Length: 80
Image 1 (cartoon, rainbow, N blue to C red):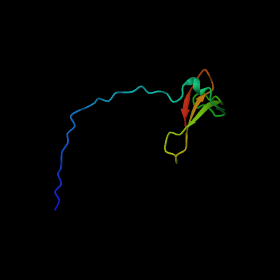
Image 2 (cartoon, rainbow, N blue to C red):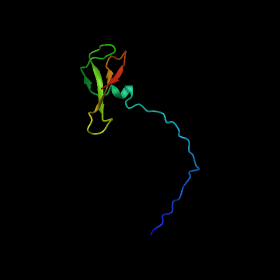
Image 3 (cartoon, rainbow, N blue to C red):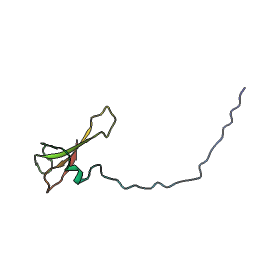
Image 4 (tube, rainbow, N blue to C red):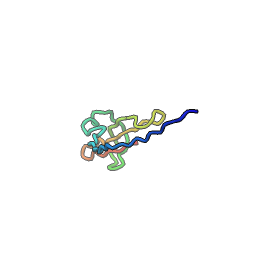
């Protein structure tokens, strides 16, 4: 017959979690360097936008497309 020793461990050291600054995936300057497509902006109804694709979920899910309106006065952003 085997006896098992059960040892209880207590953690006495607590480390506070620090908040990190969130960096944007794409800056406004880098967005205008991307490819353009003919899509209607949901905000101003302008007919052209710049887009970038990024895999934000698992591999079996479709890529997320980030759009920015090509109307330089608005710069509205949305994604699909």
